[in-house]
Length: 256
Ligand code: MG
Image (tube, rainbow, N blue to C red; front, side, top):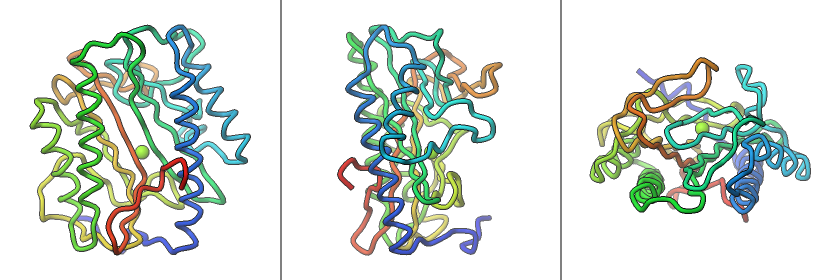
């Protein structure tokens, strides 16, 4: 069981650094979103992310993390998370493209993800994207002092399942700050009214990974790319969020 002792509460000074890192993450995701076109390689997206980071004098969070070879995760269609950018992989019209990105500023991390639809995408795929985004919003809304971690998890799960989709179990959100992944783990499923009590200064990366079909995923031979076992589409949204006295504050916003 999770001990409150292992969960770090951030100071105002630490939050200022995380806000700066969060703004850089959000700005970079905006540049990637407006650059994304059918015909681009996923490596080109990684190069754009690297360039934007360098221009802002920030460091990538993912490059070298447990050996991950890029600064951006690019996961297409049935790929859930952790897709590796490649010069051999082109984005096609009709693809769902999930971009997961994090950076470090003066030793403090922020992390966010979006799923984008490229060109002509069926309405059913767009709905998966919108529900995943909405489920993240529901989780964020529950990040209030006095609520419990299970309130966040169950809010995400309820939104996803009400729409007939599945929440991935094998990967979860996380605390974040001095490290990319800190306690507590933040599952996208759970029971309201249970778990860690939320308090001001607690920072969580909430990241629903939602499959159109069943929840099961497999990891490919590259050791990273997670795909839906049934081949169904998947979407992913993430924000780094701090609990304040007044409710949630999203740190991964472009004008933060
Ligand atoms: Mg994350």
